[in-house]
Image (cartoon, rainbow, N blue to C red; front, side, top):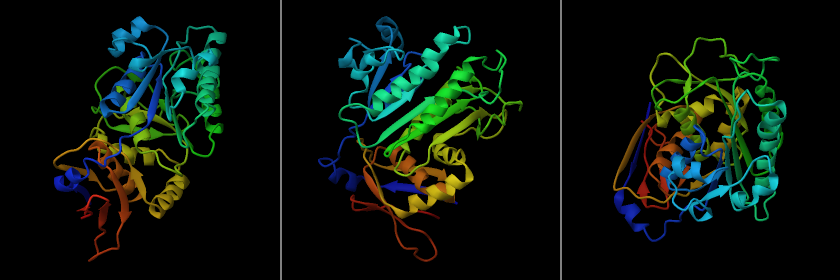
Amino acid sequence: RTLTAFVCAAALAAQVGAVELSSDVVLVTGATGRTGSLIYSQLKQLGVTVRALVRNVATAREVLGCNVCDASDGVYVGDVTNATSLGPAVDGASALFIAVGIGGSASPERMQAVEFDGVKNQVAALATQRNSPARLFVALVSSMGTTIPSPPAAVGGSVLHYKLNAEAFLSSSERQGMHTVIIKPCGLGDGNASRAKLLVGHDDAMLNMKLGVVQRADVARLVVAAWQNDAPNLPPLRFDLCAANSGTPTADEDLPALLDEAKWPWQRKASLGSQQAEKRRWVTHDRTDFARVDAAFIEESYFMSIVAVAKRHRIVFELGLDATVGGEALLRLDGLGCPFVALR
């Protein structure tokens, strides 16, 4: 079955003066790194207010393309191992993308300071800011291999011990209104996104399979999609991510379904009931004359699929499920005076 979304230009034009801009402030740490810079770039392309935590202004200017490279540019100098340096960067932020990492050749003390204590410092700074937003989102880019008691250097080495501890801390740190996502890639490449079929799993089950590395660009777009599709009552996510050697590449519109697949079976069932029970409003700010997107219709995640359609085209809407008419489900686009029909 196919989900086809149509948005009429006249209704959007009527809302030009009433469209509310997203007030989200998003912070990326490790923003000059190979993965963090891609997350930062994708968020900038979405038009959200994105900040970068960096250790070196010269590197930030080279990698991020900032001009002044200070707070006026959304660039903050800080160190995740120094909790007091994080305050200005997190002040007012509602989302945190943690892409800080350290090589396996570092000392155990340095590994702990960055990979474990650094994560604790970042999450604590976000959660305890004076005017904390009601809803918070935290995403951590970690690594597969953390189930191995003594991982060899080829898999990641002893740094995985501290990554696992950081994952455990983040999973236990959720409070009401906070959603956490932990993505554990099986191996990272620097190629283009959308070239491979992405696979999700748990507990290193894919580690011994002959799979391809995941491109950092794919990690970036998946973690950004997790933030875009964040909503009340979603369960915390922690999952492995690999790339298949063959198969249809995972497109942007497939990412909500992939995130749903990353849940445990009981989480999928619970979140489906929650999504069906409530309306949701997503605030975006661009306008298009006409938008049409086709995406695979997956029953357990159709709300997420529709959200991805609307967010990709920056549409303000409330999503509600109308009564079934003639055996077909009809969706309405509230507040725009425009029918949003369309499961067929």
